Length: 209
Image 1 (cartoon, rainbow, N blue to C red):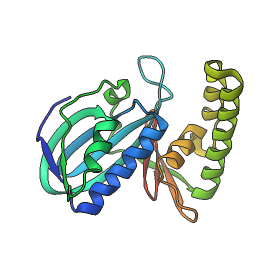
Image 2: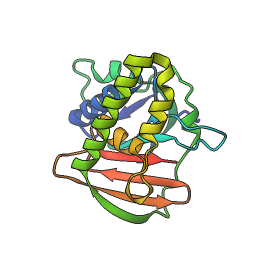
Image 3: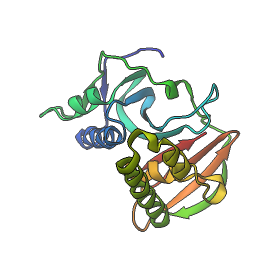
């Protein structure tokens, strides 16, 4: 990862608050998780890991992505703990300025960068059924954890690996729901390129490998 500027100027205070809410949701999924901050030109791409992959190719990886407009162009590529993001976005009077955390984090998923181009549209999916898949899966995984504790890993893999339409896995629905990307009456668009799928929902994107 390459460093860059030590401060990012987002478009406005609402954008900074939005970044904070996104980080809070990601932290609820993985309290010890990280966020990859990529700034190029006038855009900040904020990546989070939702479900880990396996093997050298990271098969099964599920990532969340939100983009934010910057008021001033910047260059940055760092991975930082989610807690440092929530701390900085919750400071009173922060305005639209985000001080880049000096503490770096290790996240294996951050080495996987989906292509920016070459995506082909697969199909459109209503958000409501995706939310239903996510909530049903959360209930099943929670019940398994309560019954078997750490031994419930197989249940988690089975639930979130279940196939949906267009090659999408239930883990993609879970990520979109947990990160707040779905809206009750909205529609998500599924795209594919190579080994990657992208679910573009009203509130953000989910990338699956």
